[in-house]
Length: 235
Image (cartoon, rainbow, N blue to C red; front, side, top):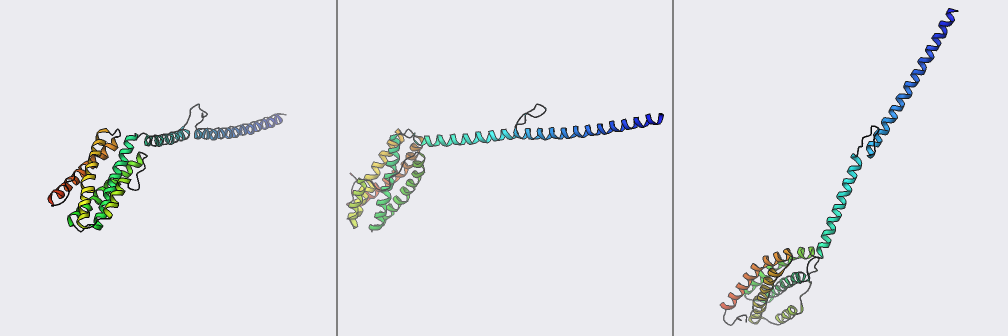
């Protein structure tokens, strides 16, 4: 009788131990599930199991989105800035380009037709200096949305056609009269006007940069004209 009671107690104790072990395993599995869920929630920036919020991933995406948006805005401002140049400043850029182009073209013509070393040296300087000035204008024009002329205007085409028909001293005199003196006087006056009236700082800077070059060219042309007998006075 006593032995039967002891056996029953042992059986109950064994059953209780098995139940306890099973409960512990279930609790461990639940804990692992919760930890996995917490990790996943933290990565996506949602509320974690302890009530905190980890926004590392989502914040990074928001920051990159904001940067992209800012870059697009900056690009848009640049594009709108191209249209802000005034009509007068646009004409100023085109006038400077035309003056440079004309000096380069007539300078090349003088290099091919003149037999005078001094005239050829002057012509080479025109090609070099005005060629550089024209190249410097190209990025400025592009940034302001201005399309530069690709050929001479009617006035300079007529000048080139007239020079084409001349040779020798006749060519030298006409070239120095028109391209050397008259064109440089006209260009100098235009640059001074642009420097004073330009609303765009970059346009004004371009005129100011070219003015000393044109002044030097004009002075050289005047000296050549006055030093040679029979050359034009430029009037």
